[in-house]
Image (tube, rainbow, N blue to C red; front, side):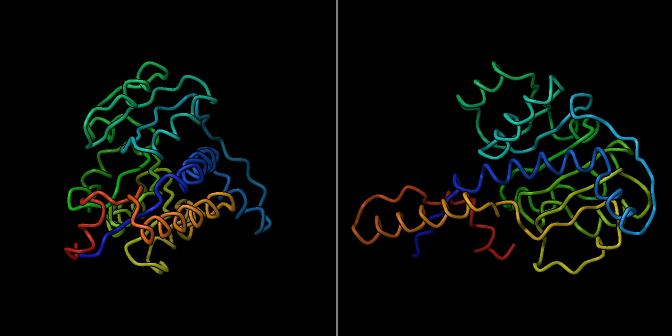
Length: 239
């Protein structure tokens, strides 16, 4: 009987920007070079440019769309898209403006050089990417999750990367936070403390929008951010 409302628009720009930043960091091994420099080692890593790779985006909502918009500035790389939602006018506009193709997730796993996840955590997406999916990716592929923990199976990701598969990963969200798991042993796996929305402007916007929603509730106005059923069913059902 409790209404759930949220502020999905406010954090989207910050999460999209961080995602692109993680792409660049992993493609050029910035985190590895930084670590070696601090350890007194001088090693120049070869890398790849964003315009030369295929990017797979799973989840084309606010954040996924924002990532596509940012990628436009890096050239005309091939972008593969997948979403579990219904076809929308926004997606039609994306098709007209950008070099994108809609593909099954399995095709994205096999063909993309970078895969970035932007779906909600639901019964459908929990453990969506496990060992089978990770091993179907290119050996030098990169995977990024700035969406929700539990979409990528953390134990499977550790096992696959420990065995030398995947050139890099970046994980901002975890099953349990603060994170204290085995992925900390993998140097080519970037771990950030659920900080996708942590820009000053976006956090401020989140607080303002939440306050405005409280005012609407207290003054019997229609709420603008009521969460879709599937967005919070996963917590209610203990999944």
